[in-house]
Structure formats: C-alpha cells, structure tokens
Length: 50
Image 1: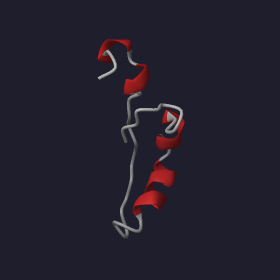
Image 2: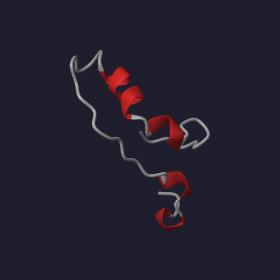
Image 3: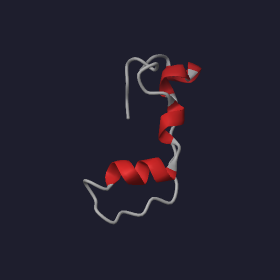
C-alpha cells in the first residue's frame, strides 16, 4: 500500500498475517498468508520523498 499521508496508513496495520488473510478472503477465498513484510517509505530518509 502506498500513501502520500503516512498518518492514513500506519505500518502497524499491515504486519499481521491474520488480519491480511481476513482482508484477502473476499478476493482470494482460501488464501494462506504466512507472513507480511512492508517498509515505511514515507519515513525513509534515503527515499527522498519519492
């Protein structure tokens, strides 16, 4: 997920495999989610706001 406003999408909301499985069920019934990995690009100093 990408967001121009990091307050709208906190990274903590996307690191739970069970929550991600629940969110994906309507699109991919029976999906198995083993892990979720993300990076907070909005607060990465080397991304230079890109």
